[in-house]
Structure formats: structure tokens, C-alpha cells
Image (tube, rainbow, N blue to C red; front, side, top):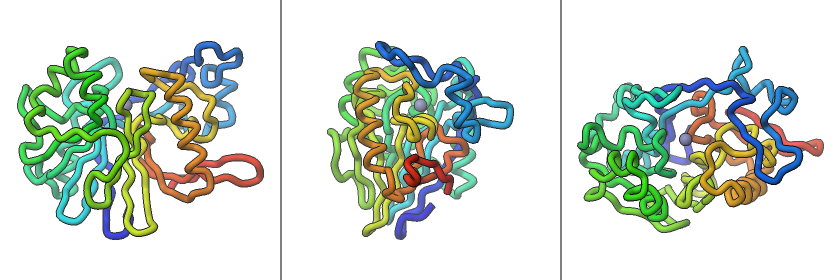
Length: 269
Ligand SMILES: [Zn+2]
């Protein structure tokens, strides 16, 4: 994926496969919740693997803009947590010609364990020359109150430059505040002139949530706010032709949300 002179490449850390009907829960207070039955999935079979499983990629994106080498999200790391198993991110970066010491910036869409896995390893920063960046609200929500996140992330504190909501971050990279999944959940907007692409983090987990924004999200800290954020995103994307990829889309592939003949469609590529 290229946005002007900026390149965006997926870097896989692993893959998790879940039964599609188990992955989504119902929204509290909703009489007719979407995303919990075979019937709900029937129109969206194309988004599942051949055996009907929901495939969630784990990993991040390598963004090269000007003289910056930026990693957006860092996967699960060497941890095994339930079905979540990573381990491949550094090899993926190496295959793209990037050594850990060459990374200039680590940008974290939010601080859930499956996005911060390779920030540190055995208490040492993995990317020793990088500035680590996240929204200050997520830092305050997780580091301190959450023991697992604190152990993982405390060592980056001296390398941290948090941002606060929406704004310019680096040349060609802006943050767009997208709270709900976590308090500081952020969409990373890559742009060059009138071209742009968006990295959605966990604002959505599967394109189904863009096609029908009534689907309940996965592990949202504030489900109601996350739903409002998804609706606003879908409104913005519909017909915009902006390529987007979320942190767990299969293969970390980009797609576009199109609108025609009264309904939305998802086109990969
Ligand atoms: Zn995630």
C-alpha cells in the first residue's frame, strides 16, 4: 500500500481463529442483538474462512515516511494467552529489511496486550532507538491500574511521548481520537496530498462491523461509546474510497467500504 511516497506494509505476529458465533456478544439493552447466531453470519460468510471460523490477524504495520521508520502496533509478542499466540513480528520486520534498532517510532493505537506484545521483552525495550507513542488516556488507564500492562509497558516510560487526542503526529501521520474500545483508542491516518489511508486499530475487528454498525464490538471498555465511534467512522468512510485496515483484519489487508444500490459492500484491496 502506498500513500503518495509513504509505504504501509503489514507485519504479522500470528493468527487467531475463533468460532464466529462466539466472537461477538450482544449489546446490553438490545432486544435483537446482532452477531451471535449462525443466521447473523449467513450474509457475511465471505468474511469467514472456508470452515466458517473468524480469522483475526495479530501484528502491526510498518510505515516508512520520509526518514521515519514507524511500527504501528506490535502484536502479542512471545506470550501465549488463550488462543492468542504471536512470535513472528521481529522476523516479519527483518524480512522487510528493518532491524529493531532502525525503528524510529512505535505508535500504539491502544494498549491492549495484543498490541503491545513487542514493546518490551524481559523488561528491556525491543526498539532501543524508537520513541514510543500512545494516547495519554490509555497510558493512564492501563499503566498503574492494570498489572499485566504495567509490567509490559513501564520499561518504555523513559522513551514515551504520549499524544492527547486528534492531531498531527509525524510527517504524513495524524492521530484521530476514536474512544470506546479503550479510553485512548486511536485511528492512525496516513496522508500525502489528497491521498490517505487509515489504520483503524481495534475500532472494528472484522469488516462486518463496518457493513452493519449494529454489531457489538469485541472487548470494548465502553461499549456504548465504541458503538457511537463506529457509527461516526462508517459515516465518514461510506463512499469515501479511503483504504482502511484494522489491526485484526485477515492478512492485515486493506479494503474499502463502498455504498451503492442501497447497501454497503466491502471490497478488499
Ligand atoms: Zn486487539
